[in-house]
Amino acid sequence: MASKILMGDIPELMENIFDNLKNEYYSLYSCSLVNRYWCKISIPILWEDPFSFEQPFTPDNRLQNPSFISKYFSSLDEDEKFMLEEYVINPEFSKTLFDYTKFLKVLNLFCLEILVGEWIDLQLNDSKPPSDPSIYNITNLLLKLFIKNGASLRKLHLNFSDHTKILPETFYFLGQNVQFFSQIQELSLCIISDFSTEDAIGFLRILAANTTKISSLKFVEFYSHYDPQVYRALINIIKSQEQLLYFNIFDGEDFPEKNYHGIISALESQKNSLRELIIKHCICNEEFKVLKTSENLEILRIKYCTKLLTLSDYKLSTLEIVDRPIDASKIVLILEKSGTLLQRLKLESENEMILEQSLLLETLRSFCPNIIYLEILNFKFSSKFSDLISNLQNLQFLSLWCFWSIDDITPEQELVSQFAERLPLTLQYLDLRNSCLSSYTDILLNNCYSPLNKLLVDILHKEKQVKAIIEFCKRKKTLNYVGVNILVDKFRKELEEYVILRPRYRIVVNF
Image 1: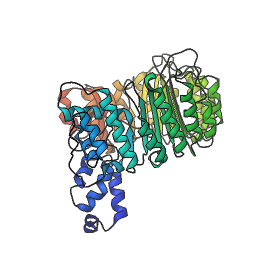
Image 2: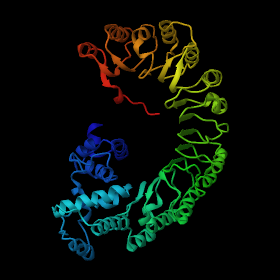
Image 3: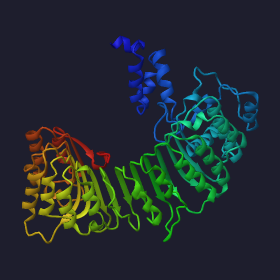
Image 4: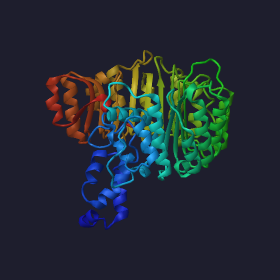
């Protein structure tokens, strides 16, 4: 089997293996050096997303060394070479084994402009920054090469800055080569500068005419002062999609009244397909009522919104609300309706305690027994909360930011002991950072029967805490990671014999 894989006798299997390595750039780069067949499969994957800032392209950091752009210019025609010569750039580049331009799948327009500027600096070796015309002309040259050589995007991030300029020739190629946009699945839009409005309108109109497969649409920052033609183009993009699944909007303004220019209303056209909705810093005015028709919505995340949506018409599997503060009386109806379908719940009441906590706990206990992820910030810990936890027999992830309740007469140590005993046997992850329970880690672990795999606490500075962790490891044999903010050095070596210690921010669960 190993020899068949090495020689490429099982092509389907090899393609799946390499595709699963697409985010492991160093591994994929090494694979490209094994033999000709592995190189032929891995190189297109390596060059799918060369302009993003998050990942290195090769073992060399491409942010400091944008020289990879030169590989795109290995076969320029005479007019294209002349354009480079105008900026005192030598247009003679070495021939390449691959036509790298056709491999592009992900394009971030802002990152492209930044890296082109760095590439020009590298070519000129000049202390002066490159001129705007040189940046946007070479950026347009790259876009033209991608389009005419057959690239087909999967993800597109648009940011029309003061320096963005799309040339008429580029628009012509975009209009003639529909393949470039036709397979886009994820589209995100950031700021549109007043200086780039005309280019943005042209770009968005072409997108509306040539994309039908977008499943994810994100407005990184939404502003209400754009030219009306911008909003019409965006509405057409929304309505022209066959199946929009994900919509995310972040309002970049802080106005008491807000006009969303029909963008939210246009989502009614996707009411049968929309599955996930994220609304941040929005003023949920009358236009948002159309979202109630999205009967198949499964995931809803609302963060810092005024005039909170009437949350009663959805049956959700995931609900996240971040507010100042959270009033539980406004969300109990959606909790009741979601009922047994609700599996993930995050309630973050910033700077203030959650209001109507008793109502919240009783609703969750009565209607939502199938929660597997629960994160609650700023609430009063009590015996009623322990009752809730004992009812969540599928709970796997629990994160708490809680304080002692002055209304509960039960002693604190007894409350912790009862809570630990009631933790479900499915629980694997327990986050007690910023929790009143963190100082009672020893009592909690000594009475805990859950197979914890990850434990997060603020501080480990007492011998009884360390001893409790070690005894828990010996007894349950499940705890692998402990995330801690402050650890007394004399305990480190002893703990590392049983668990892997990490800064608490390094242990992350995707919600």
